[in-house]
Amino acid sequence: MDSLGGIAMFVQVADSGSFSATGRLLGLSSSAVGKSVARMEARLGARLFQRSTRHLALTDEGEKFLARCKRILAEVAAAERELGESTGAPSGRLRISLPRYSGLFEPVIAAFMLAYPAIELDLDFSDALVNIVSDGFDAAVRTGELDDSGLTRRKLCTFRRLLVASPAYLARHGQPGHPADLAQHQRLHYRFPATVRLEQWPLTMEGTAPAPGMVCNSVEMRVHLAVQGQGIAYLPAFAVQRELAAGQLISLLNEHTQQQTGFWLLWPASRHMPPRLRVFIDFLVEQFQNRTFGAWP
Image 1 (cartoon, rainbow, N blue to C red):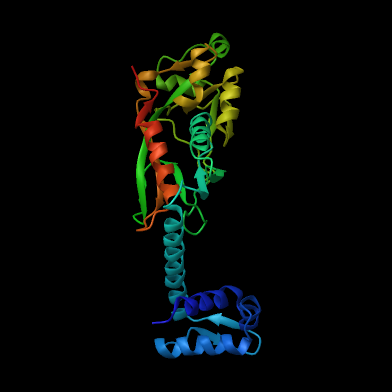
Image 2: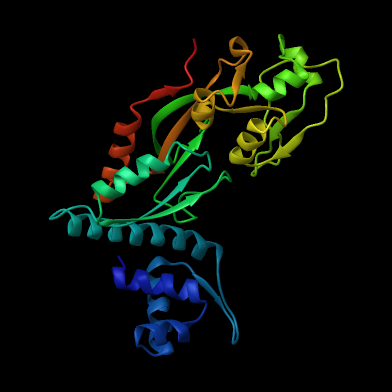
């Protein structure tokens, strides 16, 4: 079996595409690096690189071997971090992908930072789909049905979406009494960034031409426009809690908006979970306690 040093050298050659560049990085001659790779190929009985005077490229066997080698090195690094952190408070960097929904995660993240000041958070707020492993995230929070069997998950909470409008808008245009009435109202739609499709409202509005509306990919903009009387919006209940409580918005057709969506915390399956990731997972699960936002009646 090749040593970890030999595996790390192979990975470096694959990433740099050059024996000489790897040699400069490791303080070795390009010849020594080339011989190390050749010995590895001989032991494996497979060619890992196609070589020419100006070009170095992985073979199909090399591509497969590289993927496994990177996983081996990542597991070793994770084990080293875990051992290093086990003697003290969790520390280090966590890169987390969070949805752009406003008002739900901010206070929880702030409380986590106070509880674990030695953990450095790198937060990416986006509604786009991410590949947790290849994009370099430690964990991600997402909604909906999740099919990736390579990820471990915990459910954080559920929420309803509500149809809302301002009292001023309803005074001008009337309050819909049935889902079909929405076709005659201005609607503030959401477009998913990953698929560019419009979010479907769980209501039947066939048979009539839709009134003019607006489309965007921002919760905040739709809340603002709804409060300003620009139309009816279909929004997460937690995003409009303050506006509903203040009377700035009114929920509509509640009996037709009972479907609930879950927020899930996902992370790569691994035998060696860093303590900083473990405490982050436990903290979020404890804070949300599988609550339902917008339960009705």
